[in-house]
Length: 162
Image 1 (tube, one colour):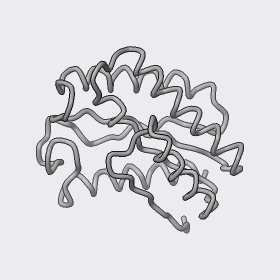
Image 2 (cartoon, one colour):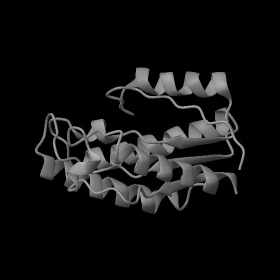
Image 3 (cartoon, helix red, strand yellow):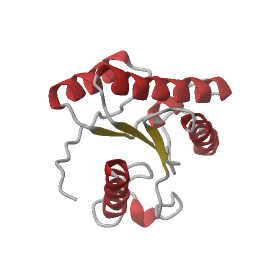
Image 4 (cartoon, one colour):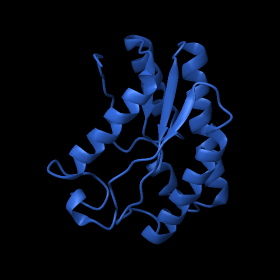
């Protein structure tokens, strides 16, 4: 398939940060893509007091973002990528964080089924326990982790264009 892919990275990106969401919306408005793939939200879970409420709030924020993209910008489809576990975290214990990731992914997967023009994408071939994928327990390295991530994103693009 022949398509143009543009990427936006926001260091420390959070869906709960209105400036970060506005950056995403401005990027979309400027570039007017047909399909959008969103992989954001992990930093929203690594906060003091994160709980079941945080899981639901994050999931709803991601779904609201997808709805905004499809209605305001007439995006054909939005893919929300699975959040990934982390070996290391900044604020809460990694085992607590990873439990919240599992719950958020379950919530997203269940809720997205009812959303038109939105799909959930499971990242495959990457395990947090495999240190060969990561530089620091959070970010993919360029030798192993990023090529696997690239294949996942490529797969989600191909699926979105069908």
